[in-house]
Every structure is written in C-alpha cells, then in structure tokens.
Amino acid sequence: MKIKTRLTLQFTGIFTGILLFFSISVYYFSSLYRKNDFYGRILNRAFATAHYVLDADTVSQQQHALDQRLYFQMLPREAVRVYDRQHRLVFSDGEEEVKIPASLLKQMQEKGTVHAEQGDRQTVGIQYLHRNQVYFVFASSIDLYNLNKLQHLRTLLITGFVLALVTVVLSGMAFSRAALKPFLRVVSEVEKINASDLHTRLTQADGEDEVALLAQTFNNLLNRLETAFEAQKTFVSNASHELRTPLTAMIGELQVALMNKRQPEEYERVLKSTLEDALLLAQLSNGLLQMVQASADSSKVPMTNLRLDELVWQACAEARKRQPKMLLEVDFVNLPEDDKELVVRGNEALLLIATVNVLENAYKFSAGNPMVSASIEVQPKSLVLRVQDHGIGMSPEDVRKVFVPFFRAESVRDISGHGIGLPLAEKIVQLHKGSIEVNSILHKGTQVTITLPKLMVTYLL
Image 1 (spheres, helix red, strand yellow):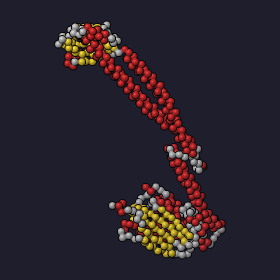
Image 2 (tube, helix red, strand yellow):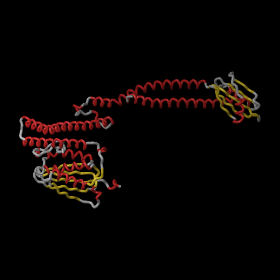
Image 3 (cartoon, rainbow, N blue to C red):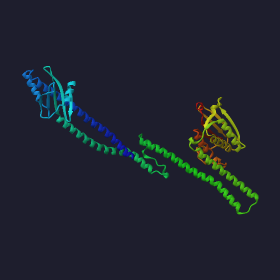
C-alpha cells in the first residue's frame, strides 16, 4: 500500500472516529435530556391530577378553579389513572388505552414514585395522601413534539456525518498528495541519477524540515559514492599500470630470449630477471589483498589485547629482515610503571603490516642514511608511535597525496615501490579507530605519526 493511500485512510479513520463519537454523544445526551425533562412534566401532571380529583372537596372554590385550569393543560395523548389502596380504579381520563400492571402498583407501594416506559410512552406514578388514605396517581403521555425534533436531529447528524466523511476523504487525498509532493520530487530526482552523473545533487536540501534532512543525507551519500567511485577509478587505473609494467617486462624479455638460442648464462640471467619481476607481482598482489582486508568491516576482524611496545619490537625485527642495512632506534616517552598502559585493542597481523610498512618506507626514502628513529609516547587516552627518517622528504603538495593508492612523489620516482605502503597503513589504522599523520620537509626528512586508542584499565576487568 502506498504511503499516500495509507495517510488518506489514517486521516479518514481518525476524523471518522472523532465525528462518530461526537454525533453519538450529541444524540445520546439530547435523548437523555428530553426523556428526563418529559418525566418532570409528567410528574407535574400527576400532581395536578391528584389536586383536581382528590382535593376538590377540601380546598376553596377559587383554588379548585386554579387546579382545574392546570389539569386541563393536557399533554399529547395523555392518560391519567387514580387507584385506591385496594388497587381499585377511582378516576380515569384520556382516550388512550393504558394498562397499569399490578407489578407497577406493587412497586409504587414500596418506592413511592415510579417511572416506566412502554415504547415511546412514558408513565409516572406517585402516592398521594388524602384524608389519611393513600391513593396511587398515574400520568402517562407521549412527547410527540420533542420526539419529532429528536428524529430530525438524528437525520441531520447522519446526513452531516456522510457529507463530512466524503469531504474528509477528498481533503485527505489532497492533503496526502500535498504532504508527499516534496518526497515525490526527491524520488523523481533520485531516479535520474546514475553512475555517470554522481555529481548531481538533490535540490530539496535547503531548509530545516524532514524533506530537507532526507535530501541532505542523500547528498552526503552521493558525496561518499562519488569519492568512492573516483578512488576506484584511480585505483583500477594505477593498479592496471603497476601490474602491466612487470608483466610487459617479463613477456618482452622471454620473447627476446626465445628468438634465438642462448648460452646457459644468458638463460640464467633471463630467469633471474623474470623471477624478480614475478616477486614484484607477488608483492603487489599481496599488498592489494591486504588493502582489501584492511577495508573490511571492523566487526568481522578478530581483535585481541596487544602491547604496543612488543608489537613495535616485532615490527623492527621484521623490517631488519627485509632491509638488513637498516639501523633502528626505539625510545619511550612517559613510560608508565604499569604495563597495562601500553595495551591496545587490535588485530596483531594487520597492525604489524602497518608498522613494518612505515618503518620500511622510512629506510627506503632515507637517501643513504640508514638510521630510523621510532618513539612510543603514552598519553592519557592513546598511544602514539612516531617514526622519523632524515632522508629526501616530500613537498607539501606530495604530502597531501601520500594516502592515495599507487601515488609516488616526484622525489621518489627512482626508488622501487608501488605506492601501497602508506595507504595500506592508513586503512589499517582507521580500522582500529586510530589516526595516521605525515609531516615532511623536502630534503630534510619525514615523520609518520600513528595514534591508537589506549585500552582503558576498566575494560580489562
């Protein structure tokens, strides 16, 4: 069911319930008031009958004339009956055939005054004491005038209810259409956006209502999608180039070697060169797989409690294996007495890859200076690892692009690499809810700062 239809039905249902409750209440209380009011009038008729019939021989002629005048002010289709204590009919007036059951007489003896209904006819009975004798006086009538008015009111309420219901349905449809018009416009604009024009933005984002909030949220989503698509295009383009270069070299060298018969030494040289290119391909493939893993959902990556100092020592040992000439110096800042202050929550394999990449980059770009400095600083809520080299450095323009996959700064074009190390380290650190920052001065060196949230002591309890 469409939201427009649901809104119309809900709007109609609520209004119908309110209107129905109002109409029934008006009719019910009007009917109740009419009935009680008419019982009061019949009660007056019963007393007027008692005064006229029973008190005629005990009052003055003037009073009797007044009682007579009151008595003859009859109600529509009125009938009066007077009974003595033995339930014998003493007086009867009115053409209507009204039967007073014995049960009603008995009930009146117990209560004194009774009310009864027979269809539209209302009856009131009272006890009246005359000359120390009890008489039972009944007056009965039909409220024709007010019953007709009540019926007219019922007709008006039903007609008004039906007309109001039709009006509510039509206004509900117009209201829902007007309420959903901005959303329909958003839907129309969204349907026109495809992968080739992700730069398009929704026009309903100006304002503070819910539609503007929805448009702003969707525009933010488009911003992220556009960035992701551009990064993907750049990634695919650069990855294709990086993969094609060693493959082209391997194919070319093998084709040249197979054109003529060669000496064993020449074949050995070709195989060694091909092996180097294959190792580069393997390294590049591993780097790409690691980037995919680092981009995964953090909830699906197994995390354990790790000591950052032990992780750094392990990374230093791995970096020395890869670069035997590297000289590493590790210092501590604000070294705590409690070892728990050095614990972080993370994936050991991924953090090791990130740390080794940073250390290896520092050595590769040190311009012949093998010394790399690393320091671990303990802060109240985080642990900071700084890696400093004294190499060729980078320009400010290149620093802004160091986390773009496959980007190579102008100053390091002649140094082997693929431009994956720092982007991979960034993804791994972000996966651990940390941050990584690069500060570099051209021809003076580069400092990479990794900040990871410290595992609070309360978390270990």
